[in-house]
Image (tube, rainbow, N blue to C red):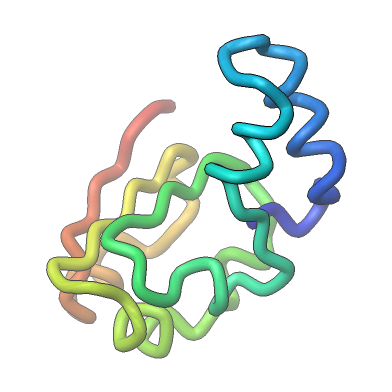
Length: 96
């Protein structure tokens, strides 16, 4: 899920890498239109962009619908680490 990048662009970028065939990319990578849908039944989330909307998500709802343990990797140190840890996430700030 990326609120600013279309599914087609995601697939084009993956195809450009040449590590898998376009068919494999489409079979192995699912692009979701909704952040809650993207996180449902996942063990981990990696926030890799600085979009402000990530700060406004209902993180309790997201965690409730994830597999446990629920990991959250914050690649931009964008989110409230203490709050997410209090919700029960295994929270890791990564990157700069």
